[in-house]
Amino acid sequence: MFETTIAGSLPKPFWLAETDKLWPAWKSSGAELEKAKRDATLLWLKEQEDAGLDIVTDGEQSRQHFVHGFLESVAGIDFDHKVKMGIRDNRYDAMVPVVVGPLKLKERVHQFEARIARAHTKKKLKITMPGPMTIVDTIADRHYGDKVKLAMAFAELLNQEARALEKDGVDVIQFDEPAFNVYMSEVKIWGIAALERAARGLRCTTCVHICYGYGIKANLDWKQTLGGEWRQYEEIFPALAKSSIKQVSLECIHSHVPPELMKLLKGKDVLVGVIDVATDKVETPQEVAAAIRQALKYVPRNRLYPCTNCGMAPMSREIAIAKLKALAAGAALARKRSR
Ligand code: ZN
Image (cartoon, rainbow, N blue to C red; front, top):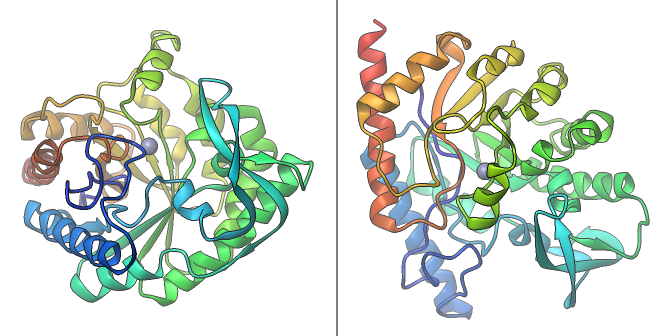
């Protein structure tokens, strides 16, 4: 009961990449970089295990960014002539690569980190990938000329990698779809269909993470415009409940999401955000347990997985470790109280 996990990313150590950044530059290259990625992955596996988490991740130590980490292994994309594009419905501008030809995987994407992690932990292992809608919202297109076609092409590649990850022994494959909170009507028209395409044929646990973004300024400013109640989930959860995806990871603690919206995910495992990633203030176990208790009003206990609101990549390492411990301690407290 109350198995704990995180949304996915963890800060990179200073010897691997620049710290406190969402797009950190690597500190080395070639074989030396590969070794540093391996060491960082092992380090975070150990920290997650020592904190007491139940489902661990590679901390996304082998990728620079959660979307471009996937795109780098895809042929048909021009990275040399990036263009400026407003992303997440123009919430912020980013320099994005351009699709210029048919998309194809050049190589395995996450085999390196999945195999290292699998060889060094007996815990359940989760690997994350960007979802098709979020990818399409983070790249320009000069080839497909149609958003849905482009999304389905990416879904096909994600599926190819996901099936290979399953063979590597990965227990949970999670697709990150922050764009689901932005384009709610398109989610119902093609977003969920593309997601299901990416997850087709998988026997391992499948998950979708839908949040209001990392704790960076553009996101914090955007949240200010969303009003006293964030009801985006209300539009998409009923459709997600009918989908084949098994788990939904959502933002909860310190957000303006009305917690009763979790009721709309009937039949799904719910990864409830009980750790805020937009503040350095570390939650107490009591606070975490209280957030779990509140979620229990809407989610059956065997379907409730305490989690973080989003990834912790831009945080300091010390704070992230303290938050991992708070998460596990809070879940332990909630378990004790609900016996
Ligand atoms: Zn997130």
